[in-house]
Length: 459
Image: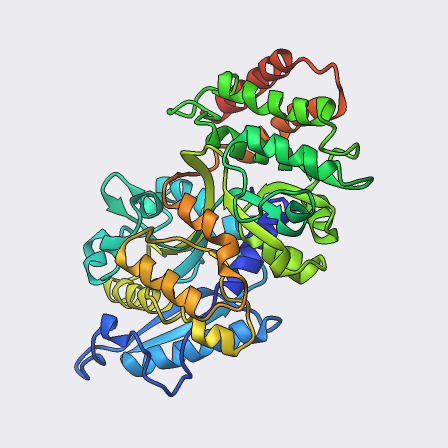
């Protein structure tokens, strides 16, 4: 979801903070063997422009990027990288205009949710003939790499990804007599934990949920996916959420809101509202990814030690998002090959680039949050998790339930026309949370008709 504040956080915060990178510009990178020795002098010079350099307002991450560019160019003296910074990295209006005008960088930054449209419009190069040079690609999660595929062709490389889980306040769990090392695994356990936290006294909220600004529809989708449901049919032409799974999402919220009184009386909440509540120490649980904990710590006066993240209860699938790079269709084969070398160096190799946790720790950046999972349990993923723990500055064990759960769920992207659908589903979410007599069957039926009209117009 591109217009909500969380999107901005993900586009700017994760985009920039994930640069937990490597050695000084003059050093030989520790994982350089994955890229081979320096390019032969006979290689023709090639210059590539690369988008989404961290801006000057993030000096540590920008410095790391620049150091990696210098080290990479030392390793590959025939390649010159021209970095392009922007904040945020994507502004939807200018992004579409640049795509339509063919003015994107040779390697341009994208959200997952834009990828298939870009491919369908012929606005990215087919890089399939060149990807055999990327040594880590064989170990990448198929559902992550699949975001950038159409059929058997590959059009880009993922850089980060996330899935939603359950963020919880460990301190409140302890105060309520709950075990913070054994977070809820079912929605029934979430419900019971929420009641105990709400019983701590006035102002305490056991479980918080969004219902305004399209955030309610976004979290409805997350809960629905976790229960095995779908927002739209496989062909994207019809709504699919008016289902037992969709009904279960709303019935669960209605029970917690009106029977248990564990969700508080203030509703119609947007992104910042729950973040502020979590930072205040009065909110027990909410749906979210590990980046929520970073935002709560950095911007809402929370403390890393007080929070944990676990997998979404009972989930076999999870709403996923992320970003990566695609190649301008005007890029030459030499530019594509050089760009792939840079992407592997900077974003895909354990121990260097964004995964150089030793340097991140030395630079005073938080290390230990499981912010991206490109490889699952494959060897590169195991190595990344080992080093994340080795150089951690935050309590890694607090997030291990999320890591364990993420390995067993299928990542699923937002539905087509996500923003418009979320706006419709906001109505159902807000009704359940503000009206005790809300008719769930009628709400889902009304929403289904509206979403079918939206999808019909786009087909």
